[in-house]
Image 1 (cartoon, helix red, strand yellow):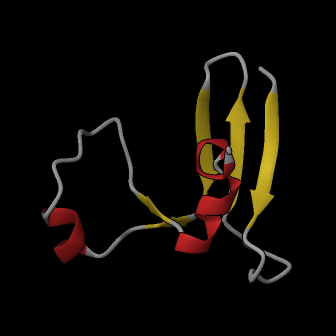
Image 2 (cartoon, one colour; image 1 turned 90 degrees about the horizontal axis):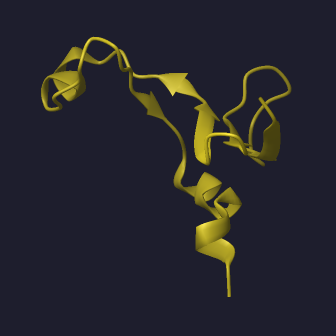
Length: 70
């Protein structure tokens, strides 16, 4: 699997940062970020047992190629 690191949250601390990766083999994105554990927020979503929810800051959108493409 070839993961390409697209970007790290520019405002993050040294340890523990949201980071965006692109998986060339699957043509998908992977986000390392903060796990959502707030029961009230999670209750508003229909999340299958095999999935999870992560939260990332809006400023990370700049690393998605589709957003920055001319």
